[in-house]
Image 1 (cartoon, helix red, strand yellow):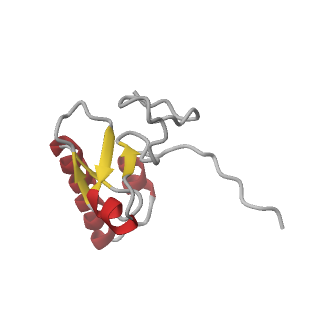
Image 2: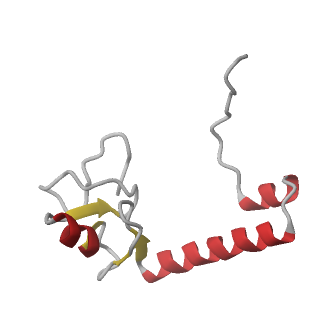
Length: 105
């Protein structure tokens, strides 16, 4: 009756595909999602961590993103970090989100 132990390691998709008993439909679903994520990142699009709407970077250097959907809905500006997807806390910087536990550069 011990709780499960996890290795806390990330597996790349090739390992999962080789070792997991995925159906053809599951493989196709994973690969579609991976391609979509890659395309969005390349185009400068990130999913808002709060409402899941798509937010586009106007400049590829921007790290601080504003979700207009959440901002309008909540009546206050909602900004988040491109890298860690956490709410933006550091109002004195447009390049450091203020999350000390995550290195966001």
